[in-house]
Image 1 (cartoon, rainbow, N blue to C red):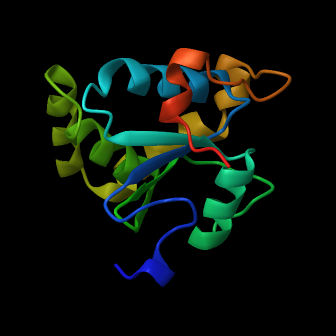
Image 2: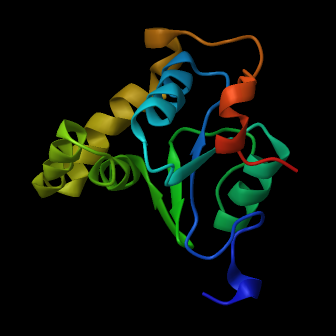
Length: 144
C-alpha cells in the first residue's frame, strides 16, 4: 500500500480496532484485546477520538452514529463479523479456535452480530463519556 493510501495515523502493516468508547461491551472488548493480544498486533482507537473520527472518514463510515466494530488491517477495512473473526484468528491459544465460525455463512453471522451491536446499550449499558486508557495501556491506543 502506498503512503498516500495509508489510513491516517497508521504505518504500513499496522492494524487498528475501532470501537465505541462509551459502550460498556465495546470497552470490555478493548480490555480483552489488551489482555490477550500478547504480540501487541492490534492498536485501538475509540470512534469518538480525533484519530477514530479520521479513520472513519478514511473508511467512508458514518462519524455520528456507529453500529459496528471495525478493523483496519494493513490498509484493509473489515466490519461486523468479518472484523471479529479476523481479530480472533490472530489471538493466541483457544481464542484462535473461535475463528472457525467463519465457516458459518456471512449473512447469518452478520445477522447475529447485528442483534447484539444494535442493542448493546440496552443489553450492557453505556458510559457517560469515553473512557481513557490507563497509563500502562496508553501505548496500545492511537494518539495525536
